[in-house]
Length: 142
Image (cartoon, rainbow, N blue to C red; front, side, top):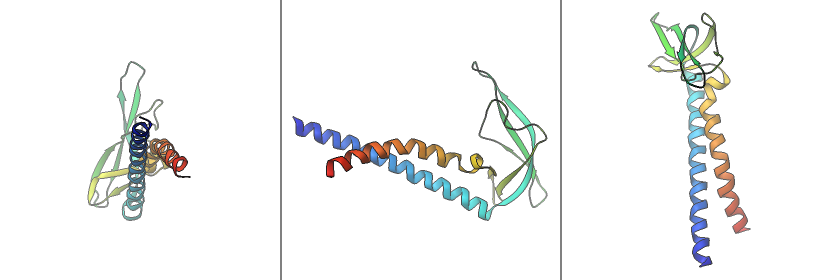
């Protein structure tokens, strides 16, 4: 009976470890994607043109909409994927954005959170899985 429990525990902890490692690889991929965009993309100044209000029973959050002009003098807009309360920017405020000239859907605000948010979130989720799963195997094999 204990052999079955041990085998089940090993499978469970192996799944936790593999899940954590997969999230870690995804986080590193997001980090490299952001760095690649900064190296190869075009950095320009954008203006906060609007704040979209998201109504909720817990209170309102605000999503900034940025307007910028690309290298070809074409006006572009970019709606942030982040909403917050209070509003992160004021209408008319200037911020730096980086965009891919070949794919205008790939735009990020040049800030720590704007560039590396998914890296940070994924690593925060991955760390406990790697520690718990890896800790089990470290204890078992030592």
